[in-house]
Length: 281
Ligand SMILES: Cc1ncc(COP(=O)(O)O)c(C=O)c1O
Image (cartoon, rainbow, N blue to C red; front, side, top):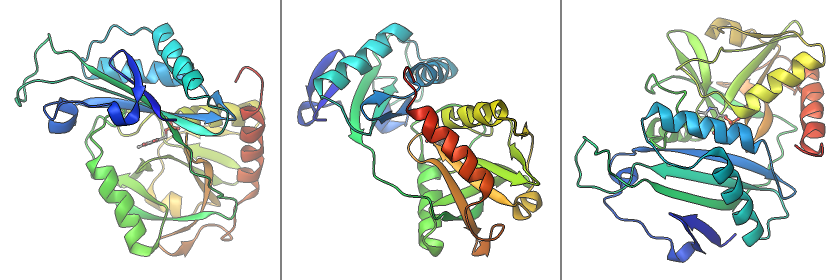
């Protein structure tokens, strides 16, 4: 995984250098994607590229890379690194280099970077714990922005507080998402996840889970969840490209349901694991 893509070149990671005046460094002025790779197969690439294009458009960053170009760059880099195992593709685009000034110029040349990284082996079958925290982020959370300081602080808070894996966030009493994941809850066999708007990232895993649940006959509603509803849930899960679907068995030290991963999680996780191995996916 030592070969990376930077601004048109495929080069070793150690040789990939950018300016300290890159706006990604000075302002966090850029967007990114994280795409999982299972047994060497890049998973849901078109969906991730579509979200990347939406993030670029949302910050008015124009880049002449169409979907086909993204697909072929990722596939070429996979070949150059001989990717056969589980890993992840990281793509970052910043507005490029210029004097440090909030205002940007139309003629900046964006910085484009792609690398493959190992996917840390995880086993969430026994469930993980989470903490609840106020959502301290901005109101454009549908953009996958590199400006992740609040998320970093929230993840760290969860770990420091009681060794928790995730911080589940609420804004004005309503659950938004996790610091690096989307949130689902189950009550009386109905699955609920907050609707997609500026308060949360439209997770690629989230959308697939909603699809798989509905196809297999579960009622899955995309509606607001209050903190009180979450605390009365039978099951809670978090989802992301790198984690998959992780059952939350404890929040702020309090047991969720019976404190064990629930039956609906087992069912949907089975569907998700099977889906990952389908040819063409
Ligand atoms: C804030 C946030 N929400 C949700 C997600 C899940 O999105 P996806 O399933 O596309 O990984 C992520 C993933 O990193 C995230 O950072």
